Structures are given as C-alpha cells and as structure tokens.
Image (cartoon, rainbow, N blue to C red; front, side, top):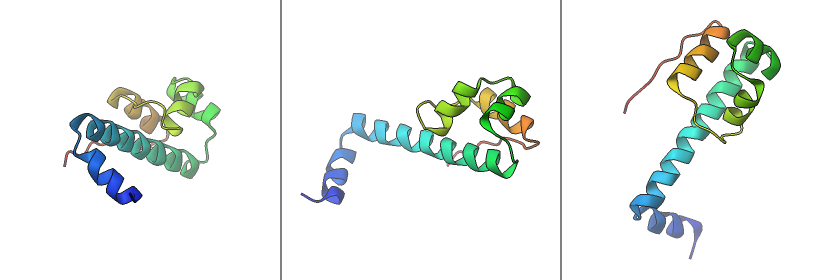
Length: 89
C-alpha cells in the first residue's frame, strides 16, 4: 500500500482525520510564527521579552508541539509590530 493510499484510508476515520487536521493547524502556526519572527529580526528570547510570552512557549509553537491560543498569537504579533488575524474557511 502506498503512502497516498494509506493516507486516504486513514482520512476516512473521523478520529484520525481530526488528528491530521490538528497537526496541520499546529504546523501552519509554527511556520507563520517562525517566518514573522525571522522577518522582524528577533530571536526567540527577544520576542519572549517583548511579548511577555515565555521563550519555551515560543519554541514549542515553532516546533509545532502546541497550538497557540488567539490571545498568545495576538501578543506575539503585537510584539513584532504586526496584527494577528484569523481566517475561517
């Protein structure tokens, strides 16, 4: 069975599908945060100081280990001089 076939079969399982979607959301947040932080020229430590969000939390978000709350994303965005927005599609 190919990976694509396996993935299609797994997506038929509602629990597995939700886990895949949650992982996708964590990865999206990780990429967006890391790019924004790097574009702002900030280290994780500097962003932590400016946002009052711990460096370990920033690190866990960037490694897609946790899903940040909207409040956390907003604090991080503001610390970088940006605005957080949510898209529902």
